[in-house]
Image (cartoon, rainbow, N blue to C red):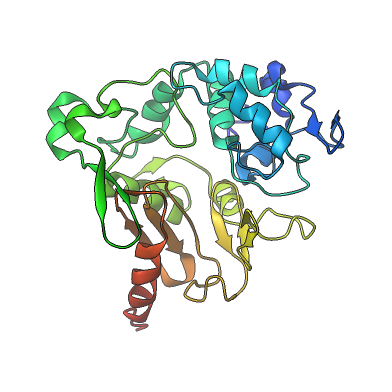
Length: 310
């Protein structure tokens, strides 16, 4: 939609979602108006001020949790209506925080396109790329291929968390989460990432312009924001583009990563990364929660070391 001129990266989010106009920031004493209004670009790079209710701003986190923002029995429209009434833990564009930004983007997509998020994904991404196993639920005829999900104690003990036969993913959800609602396969995920790696086109299907893809893979964080962080843990040398983390400089945090590498991880310890200079795309699928980086750490060095430059 950005390529088609239907929305701008620096559009205020409230231009498309009026219910989020006038979002306040939770200060130490009381809520206050931010210096800059949240933009679409902020949503894409997670500088929106939105969180998952674990930002460290206790007052804001408490109100977020009380609002039950990601209620599975509500819609994306319900979600953004709630968010418009909950103060942000930090000012938009002033810091980086992982949160419901992608879910809000999902609602922006619905409003601007006039389609539900699942319909938009199928028409504009999945069908053109032949991603035939990607969606918000698993139909009965594919259930035998659906992997179980486990909890891990980090020491080798796995406990069944989500059995395919009883999974909530067997039916279409009411909340079409833009931040973590899809099921997919390694093949489909690879086709999506190959499209990105090839500048927005795969097998004759043009999804994005090359210019837009370059923006997505380029660090969009200002020097004042710095590197991405989780709690007090700063991922030194790792910035964020429009949807991907980006390796900007060598660091002790990611010693195996190559400059320009982009990617991200999923809640069930899935990982993907792409290194343009190595012409490399990697997808690893695990199925354990809470999130662990162990698979990526274990295989990344081996994969890079196996590359022979001819």
